[in-house]
Amino acid sequence: MKKASVLIIGSGIAALKLATEIRSDINVIIITKSSLKDGNSNLAQGGIAAAVGPTDHPSRHGADTMKAGGFHNNPDVVRTITKEAPKLISGLVNEGCPFDRDEQGETVLGMEGAHGKKRIVHGGGDATGATLMEHFVANLPDNVTVFENMFAYELIIDSVIGKCTGAKAKDVNGKVVHFFAKHVVVATGGCGQLYTHTSNAYSVTGDGIALAYRAGAKLTDMEFIQFHPTLLYINGQTRGLISEAVRGEGGRLVDDTGRPIMNGAHPLGDLAPRHIVAQTIYHHLRESNPVFLDVSCVESFSKRFPTVASLCEKNGVNWHDGIPVAPGSHFLMGGIKTDLLGRTNVSGLYAIGEVASTGFHGANRLASNSLLEGLFMGKSLAEWIQANPIKEEAFLYAEPEQKFVRPPEGLPKKQDIQRSMMDHVGIARTESGLQKHIYWLENARIRQWLSASLDDLKPEEIERVFMGITAWLVADSALKRTESRGGHFRLDFPCENNHVWIGKRIIQCRKRMGQNEQTEASIAT
Image 1 (spheres, one colour):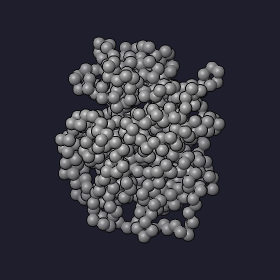
Image 2 (cartoon, rainbow, N blue to C red):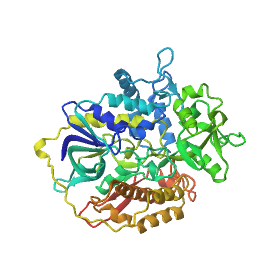
Image 3 (cartoon, rainbow, N blue to C red):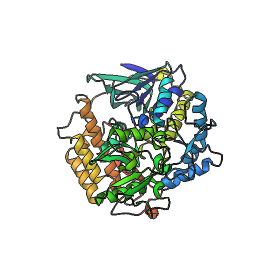
Image 4 (cartoon, rainbow, N blue to C red):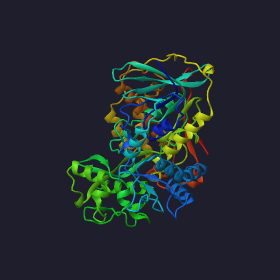
């Protein structure tokens, strides 16, 4: 049994920002499914959006965020985070984080899709995530203990005090380890690996969503999945991310004849919001028309984008001739419903980063707002935890009671879940496709896994359980939203329906263990 004041499940930017902001007298444990740097944050090629330019302003950044999000965002949250963004950048600079600078020593600002100004701060050219991760790992204080290759599979809920008091996890040998803490923080990232084509790390399988949902936490906006328009695409397989910043620097999407495909598709052309670009590419590929990213107009391409150039070279692609691309799942706008402190509806349980839904991103995340939100939420929660100490004598390390048995076998294989999600819950959705996917999962008794014991399962089996639960939740929410907005596109409801859906959120929650199993979904303003 391990004890801490703060238990963080996950090790991305939000998690490490929280850990480094916590005072040295507060004990922190980080448990991570793989290695400390092995996640989406380390792969992030884009930068951090912040209105730090002389002609920019947080209100402009906020307006771009709202527009890209289909005006489904929480305006107060947008104002708060965009206002704080320049201070977060300044703080990182003062800490010595090596952002890219010009010959005069000024921070270089890049342009990305749906931004009205150059406001993207980068590190290492197109390796901002890795730059931030290196910075935070190098500055982890002594009060932080890290357990790698530790798969958290159940949140411990003390039914007597109605509080989340820890988590159960398995190590590489399958041994169960109990972690107890006053504050339990889920920071596991999104669910990109639910799909065949994705930019996400292999470990990002929706674990945190399933963990929290099984424990009674509310979820919201699970239908909004952002598909990044440009993944390297070779022989029907995606091989890695091609940063949106490439189009910000002049890259153009063309067909195999060299004709620009975004002309006439949107006023912003190649810099249109991500869902517009992704849908346009998707329609071309459905007609067996390949799409390429023409980078001939990008000055010093290999120097400006060393990660992308290296990716192309590793896969035998001559980027001078155009980079073959296809869209793939990239970011979850929905997730565990929280406030701006990361608090959920379950006492003692918090969520930050991509796994959480604060209302900042709306229906479609604006480029480079993800690292920004992670930094903001990590700092915000750290400040709140330090200002609200919990008395030790009021905190119980109660062992969880196991009340449920494992249901029969029959959970689908990982590849089958990914294929069905891509086919029926991907870029373009229909009522019949969504119903088919849901029926398939429920026929595999997915509902029984909501309350079943996972103690005797291997980590790879638990991962499939979590993938199935999260896939079911995404499809259920997508079926209920009878319109298209942002990252949610319905072929049978191809337009936004503001009269019915503007400002409406689909909330999913299940009743706690010990009651009759019941899944509830409601629509809230």
